[in-house]
Image (cartoon, rainbow, N blue to C red; front, side):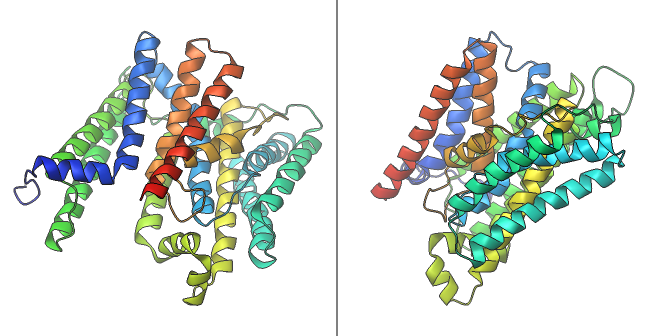
Length: 394
């Protein structure tokens, strides 16, 4: 690894950190936040049981944040995701519990309905040029009303055990024991794969003279990632293992990270968000891209609705209430620009977990829901302020 690791002068390190301060400030903020709540809660935050709950409580927010990121990068917004996820969860309850549909068939139908909702809204936005804010605001009201209608104002449940496994199931261990060896092994494999691809990417950058990140930062970042993944895997393995929903969430994160960084459609969405007119003049069908981003958002909102319903084991009339606010906040806290064209999958995921850690930590400390909303609102305002400040400064 001698060609990968070459110690850079301190001035180069400082210059690189300064030019990438937004990215590293976000990761450091999450780290500081977790350390603070770990100390403030007397070690409760990092307990295996609480970490498992943290994953289960935030999985549907993270999943919807992946779709919302593309919508925001494309220069739009979707206010209907909370209502759509609640409606799809209610539809799943009616199909599976009331009408006896097979859980897999019912789940597929519900995700398809989410995609159809996204397509309907995307069609109005892309081809009729109706502002996304108006269309999705209407959608938020419509699907909240439909959710109440199909549930009859009452909760419907419980779901079959097969459906519950989507959110409450865990990766089985290799041997009957209190420690889940398979979960730890998967954590080690994933960590090794991440380090391998990072090293390979750096070597490719060096081969083409494009490596800007100093070796000191590269080594420190990968050491921190390895420690975090291994510690997280060990702690979860010491409880029940890796939740099924974590595997789904991680697979989606990898998929969307690849789409946004290594595919033509991903680059075109960023280009469209940066300058739609120039992108259209270059021959790219921006209306179709906009349409597809909302279809994608609808599918992920549908999946999130199924996961949330499976976690509660019941569909309630209040399901999805306020989800859109946390999903949008996660993207903006994670560095997405309000004007479009800027944002990363990692940033959106980190933003979602920052909100999740704040919710979890403040709940453990007994902070009232009213004060929690105030604090989260201030964090969102600070994130947008810093984004605007560094953009104007640059």
